Image (tube, rainbow, N blue to C red):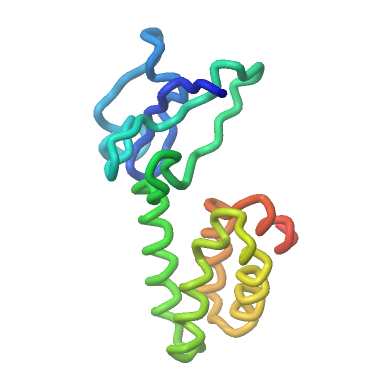
Length: 156
């Protein structure tokens, strides 16, 4: 069984500390990059946000998307999904059914699931149809939030 330090992350997803439980680390109620409130617990279930593993030989820490305890998205994941969905809704080249299909596949791009391959195919098709600004915004979403499998399948 792995044990983890506690992390401190702002609501926009900036990592302030992957080891906030160590007293030598910086602790702040607000993010030094964007000014957003910082959290060290899941807002849904109050479980501590996992930081780096105690057993870890390196200090690499990747931003978690979902709570390990309740499975709900962290605020930065919720925000990213919401903004990507709004971006899709703004596009004039997709009909309502295409917009909904694309929105529905967004969570499968963030986390590797059995539907990730299908989500990538749907995104690739949509990127051929959407306007320039929507396409750029979706690619930024992919670069910032998507899982390694989705990035690999998209050639990024």
